[in-house]
Amino acid sequence: MPRNFSVTVHYDKLRVLAVVLPHMRKDGLYYEVNISGFPRFFMTWSALGRYDVVGEEANELPYSLVLAVSDMLEKEVGRK
Image 1: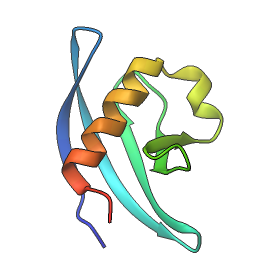
Image 2: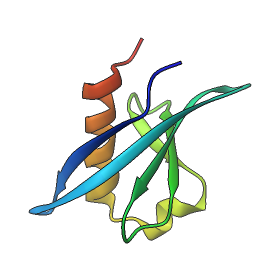
Image 3: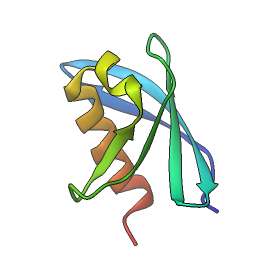
Image 4: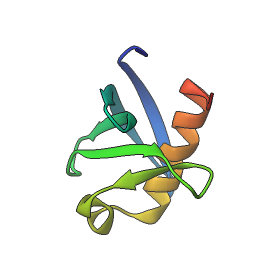
């Protein structure tokens, strides 16, 4: 199981601290992402070939933030 980590994410000329906690579920590895000012959300590898938000929280997040977190996850944990 990967480790928990914190990283600064840059999006729309803003910097935010993201705390990421991996969760192993029966259908794969998910990453819980906690960013102050936004609802907690989960990301997993998707058919789009990148990490994507799972659940209704996607509607409450700026798309540029989702893409920035996806890029960060790819860089930090890679895709195996």
